[in-house]
Image (tube, rainbow, N blue to C red; front, side):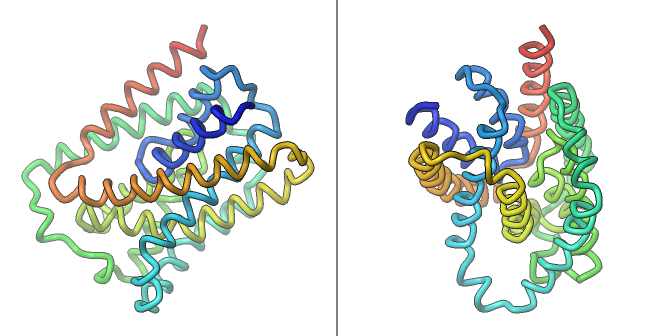
Length: 256
């Protein structure tokens, strides 16, 4: 891997981690075009730079997280289902990984967004709840949706945003809670993966890791801000269509 590869992967991670389009799928696809093999060391690099994206969310929402203690209770309540399922079924989840699975789930998730938006076509977001209005029960429900993202290609942010819509959050609030829920979820998953695969990183990788980390942080920071602004006037339809196109691309590229 070169410095340019590290920067490119950092950009892809920062762009896709908080959009409902599967960061895992995009990192696999871009790595393929860059000629990078999906070795254990490479997968560990991809997991590591996620920490940069998490840090971006902490910076953006630090004031809200410091002031609103009740919000933390909701975030932890939503995180618990994923923590439990992840702990119990870690090996099973890893065994699900495959190019075909990623492609299918990208397409399925895209169709799900299109169906939801079809039924919400005459819906007024201004009548929906904000994150502050969420109950603990609704937070747990969104957490249950997040467990679906353990299937590669589903997209953690995509699953939680759909869960947020079912909890009658506005699109913007659904995205906001998804970003906040990423903090404990991604931190736990990243820390656990790094611990499990700590022997796959060598000293020469650290400079590339730092570059990828910083790039992911900067791009994720800009992406989250742009996403929040975008959803004030737009729907998830474009993401649904995009997921289907990328899923078909996956099947075309890797199905040869």
